[in-house]
Amino acid sequence: MKRTASFPQWHDDLPIYRQLMELLVGRILDQTYAEGEMLPSVRQLASDCDVNPLTVAKAYKELARDGLTDRLRGEGLMVRKGVREALLRRERNKFMKEEWPVLRARLRRLGIDLETLQETFDD
Image (cartoon, rainbow, N blue to C red):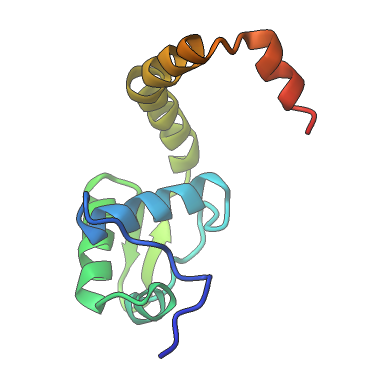
């Protein structure tokens, strides 16, 4: 099968199932997978992402363990209602603790202030 631009680009620094979980969380946050809707089947997502179905199954298992999905017997996994707001809080907190300090330090080193950043929001 020929790879296309739609396949995620996997990185060696994190297991693929963890990267797949991050992809799924992102899709829940941007409402590609809305609350109360079914996630793609293991086989479908494996095909879409060009990964082993066992990798998808492991990612789905972790999402369920984190309380993000509900299993409907014989149907698959559904995004749990109310999970998007909880994910937003979690991801914002993670950003502020882990990513923002690094980004803020880099902005300072480069002499970029908030006003300069604000000007770029209209682009």
